Image (cartoon, rainbow, N blue to C red; front, side, top):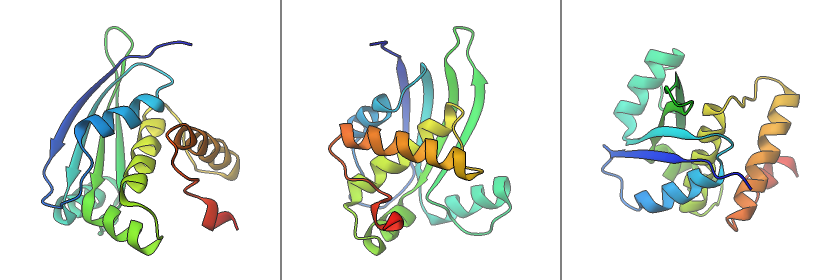
Length: 151
């Protein structure tokens, strides 16, 4: 089994409580690696989440996760930023009746896969990405996040 390296830079600009720890995020991100990565993970509040989503996606509301691929380092590591909006994650977990940390894990795995080139612009891509997410989360003993959507 190939070991990929992960450098995770952690920034928390959110006042939201009940955030996972850096080591939890690191564990989840490692499970999603299919390449070596250098990732900055930034946790934000609603204001910054809205600003970033407006600036980069032209949508004037906060979204749960944003991913920015920034290229590759001289040694081939994928470099990128993942931004998670904590209040949105908390609201979604409650609405979807999911454990909060399970939802954080899913969104981080989703973001790490995006950094590595996976997308969900069409049904084929979405199915491939969702299957990977489900398998990765299963290896972390986290239930299928799409189960209620597919039933």
